[in-house]
Image (cartoon, rainbow over all chains, first blue to last red):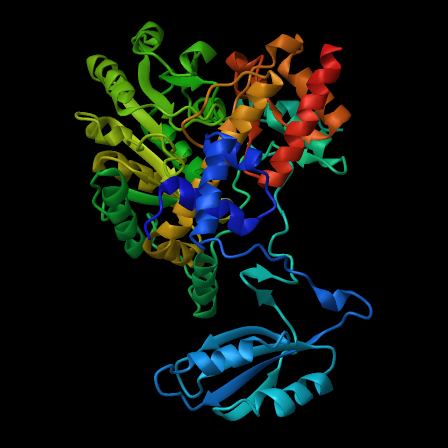
Amino acid sequence: MKLTTEELQILAILEENHQVTNELIAMQLNMTEETVQKHIKKLEREKIIVSYPTLIDWNKIEGKETVEAMIDVKVTPQRGVGFDEVAKRIYRYPEVESLYLMSGTYDLSVTIAGKTMKEIALFVSKKLATVEGVISTTTHFILKKYKHDGVIIEGDDDKDRRMVVSP
Amino acid sequence: MIDYQQYLSKTAIELEPSGIRKFFDLAASMEGVISLGVGEPDFITPWNIREHAIDALQDGFTSYTANAGLLELRQEISRYLTRRFHVDYKPENQVIVTVGASQSLDLAFRAILNPGDEVLIVEPAFVSYTALVTMAGGVPIQIATKAENGFKVTPEQIEEAITERTKAILLCSPNNPTGTALSKGELTEIARVVEKHDLLVVSDEIYAELTYDQDFTSFASIPGMYERTILINGFSKGFAMTGWRLGFLAAPKEMISLMVKIYQYTTMCAPHMLQRGALEALRNSSDHVEKMRQNYWRRRNFTVQSLNKIGLNCHTPGGAFYVFPSIQRTGLTSEAFAQELLEQEKVAVVPGSAFGSSGEGYIRCSYATSIEQLQEAMTRIGRFIDNFNN
């Protein structure tokens, strides 16, 4: 699908911060709020804008600390439906944060979130490994997140180091 | 006690202190200030460029380079000027890499001016132009542009200012502080006057990459002007590399050889490892540059509309990252306005008078800051004006 320059500009703004008001978008792009609204509705309808999630650092909250793991899963593809049926079986678990079909030495990459390492270990052994078609799993625990979805979690790369006034 | 006055240079003593300097000290002493007073990008240099400079340092590129800069970089600059602005310069003898575009300006004036030669400066203008001309022994002649003309200089104004001592015109488009960008047609009209009076043009094109509503036209690309133009550009604004201090100058080779001579005695060369980093800027960074440009464009639209809503009228500038609204309805001088705005609402702007007397009655607002900060600044300025009206 080919988008207009206006639509691409709207996406560029929303990608940085989806909480901006239509008024602010309109002012930045020299268009009316109605036009902005119309464009956004279309982008949502076409599923180009899929969702507006919020990036939360749960580990900063006492009692809400989470553990995440990325699991490499090898799968026997099924006749007619390939990997899709197995994928469906896996992504329906609410513990699954993300699921990708990969090229390379394994097939599915699954991200799991849980309260403890034990909880994740149990999920893998009891649920994931027993899904029909799954041949093997390799679990990698995430130790620290530096950057997620294009956002640097810690660090001061964004810090303004400029002088207050300059020519 | 030594009386230093008798030991010091009269020229240096008589130089006007920069109006920005005074304001800086005040703003820097306060907390929680939102600054629209910054004349540089809020973006950090793209990582690929930084990485190349790091590699250069790691690989031991710590020696001098040729006075005019690395030939490799001059070749890249030459290709860039052809690709982006359709002007052709030979890397071997028509390009110099300088320490910022500021030094390019200095070299240009030193190379062309004899004592008493007049240089026409279109005001409001960048703070250092007048001083640079004076230090090179020239006489700066100001041409005041008007808001109703969108701060564009007219051929008639230039004609009026020309005397038999006029050597050159200094043009800066897009302009700091007004953001005004001249069209190809407008530049062509100026070129006619230049030709008629046999003048040179020092064209400060440092904001070339930040042009919004029409394509940028280099003055050197106007028919007949190549021989008369000293083209000055650099990495600071378009590539977000202000602190690197890397600029460049392109001109007819007869001028360049003179400038290289001056340069070798004053500076030797621009820092080697940074020149290596700059190669990456010209080779692989056009996507970054375009992304930043679009970002500035969006902020410009927001800022212009916001200021006009508040009642501080401004034209829509075609380039750079400044808007130059009128504050005349407040009855304050631009310096008083800037000071009161800073004290009451903690928003720093630069008084227009810092850019020459024709800037009186205006302020320079830089929109090289995040949209969130701009929003907050506009809220504060709006409140300031409301309080003022009541």
